[in-house]
Length: 350
Image 1 (cartoon, one colour):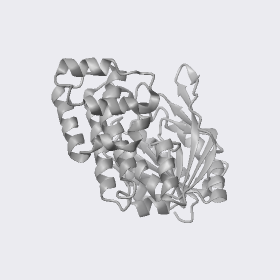
Image 2 (image 1 turned 120 degrees about the vertical axis):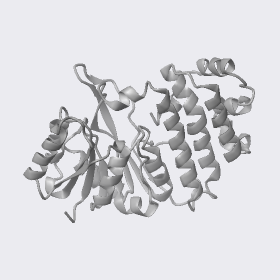
Image 3 (image 1 turned 180 degrees about the vertical axis):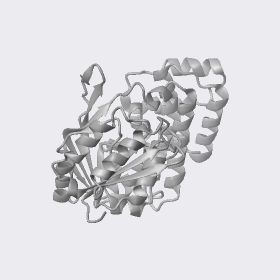
């Protein structure tokens, strides 16, 4: 496999029910199957070989375009994508989840836009489906734009406007940029994406957003992600991944120049979002865990209240100002229960 325009990485875990629809949407792409490298990663499925059997049939039908990788150990989507990345040779990289599907024009549309603008990342919109219900209303359509970064001030503006989201499957990426950035997904966790996507926002120079709904996202109520959202351990994993993002960024050449922006992102995602997600899901965070989070914030960002971006984030500022006044489980529960759910900012990483 070589000279491919796009490598598409598809992690697969017990997806025999949905895989045919995903497969057909990929092999029928208007860009031409010959221009695609489809890398299916069987993430140690436990469905008595059903998923692997389907994948092997697909590979047999398209031996020049499809590569199947069979993992012995389940690594969750992040780990499976990391393995797929080591095999990818395309000029650009895309990601599709095996229980979703895509519009047949997706890769032609985004590749043409990438070449036209010399983009490092092209972001597109999506539709939402529920089996037995159909398409759900989705007002989450980004305004089209081309963001060219020629100065630190322009990048800071882009970072704080958050036009580029932190999910991975609604984007096309220049592979050379991924290699240069040295990014990988978090493994063995449902919150794998920010560790891969966020650092790329510092490495790219041209970002394009189009409003076309080109990805068909299935809200799979049988999936592990849906079940995981109800578990307190998932909340801890969210915080842990954001701490990994912070530790990764501290080691990069970008940290000194963009320290305030990175600090604000860390405080918001690691601290505020953890409490906010608990509010959304009706989960109780043990006070001992809260104390650990506060300890990390004080250690990593000792001058947290001096961050200039808190002027535009009053809820986050109030939490930081009062974090040591929340002295017991009762006060913590009370604070979380009073968090305004209409504030959608914390939902971007979910």
